[in-house]
Amino acid sequence: MTSTMKKTIRIKGWWVAVAFVVVAGLFLTSTSLRERIYWKLSEWYSDIYYTVKPPEQVVFVPQEAAVIVKPSLTPTKTSTVVIVGDENNEILIETPEAILLPTMTPTPLPERVILEGVTYVDQHGLWNYCAPANLSMALSYWGWHISREEIGPYLKPEPKDRNVMPYEMVSYVTNETNLGAVERYGGDIDLLKRLVAGGFPVLIELGVYNPRSPGSSQIVWMGHYNLVVGYDKGLETFYVHDSYLSPTYGYELFLPLSYDDLIGQWRSFNYIFLVVYDVSRQDDLYAILGDYLDPNWSYKKAELTALQEIDVLQGEDLFFASFNYGNSLRLQFDYGPASLAFDQAFVVYAELDPNRRPWRMMWYQTGPYFAYFYSGRYQDVIDLATNTIDGASEPFIEETWYWRGQARLALGNEAGAVEDFRESLKYHPGFGPSVQALRLLGYEP
Image (cartoon, rainbow, N blue to C red):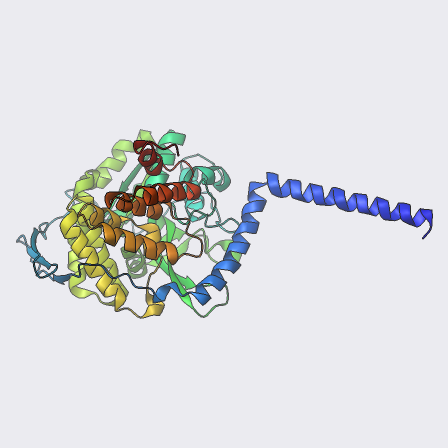
């Protein structure tokens, strides 16, 4: 080999090394690039994990099975529901009156409304960026143009965090902007139309069935946010901005969603809704919300809706209605009856076609943990949390670790509790409940 050839090889080697350093530097300094790579790798890993260990086959069995005797609601009388737990446990619950309705004065609504002014944001390319994308859209309507990449680290400090709760989005709005935000349960079609007609886009959380992976024939249930920006009364259709079904992929910017489809998907999350608003329009919003201004009223409304649906629904819809009933009671601190209602929901879940089981449910909602824990059913908390952790390919679900830690602590297992609280902080650095729990025990987070 001549000296010239050796020199050429050294030069090429030097440029390869420089190129490697540059690429490595970009990877280390670019959050967006890292997350895109993590997202794709996680997607591949999850496909393999769930094929080998199908989470839909795992069923949580509460230690206290329950049967709900369905109430017979009438339009004028208060009903009583009997919930039977084990053979020594019978509880009577007085349900809200069936005539429970908003007190707002009805006003004629336009036949069709579509709100302009929202900057569409797509969630693709970053791992599970549904919430940052949707909140970015909601803020843009009020003139706050904040990218999903700027919002993301606040909502999910760990990029792989499985879920962003609505209260976390409320926290962002109130702490990082000069806008206001209202979160309530028990929404309905009429309220959505009134809010949109009044000039207020509405964030709602839906449960949707999608292919397990692109091109797959298997479907899985997952939680997903949409921003409602319009409706057409004649077509019985709402119009939403969907960060997943984006125009880039051939979908309409104002995606139509029929009343029936919206209700069917919204039911999964107890008809929760979130309105971001300019404080200068607070009085207008409050006038539209009426009784919904009182959170407790909205919980009662959601409770009544769940009871009515339990009477008529089947399959996964009955599971969601039963789960909503438990969650509505939990929100009213009625933990004993709530725990029994959740028992019934899990009984229904076990009877579902495994391919239709919404096995991600506990990624998004923590109501059963509250109900079981404050009913003294600590082992049920541990069992449910463990099922949830084991069923996830990557258990980035900080609330689940936290609640298992609390239940372990209640049973005297301080070492296990500390371990779980610290695991929670790995998946959501700075997660307040876990930080507080550790400090109360005398440990630094």
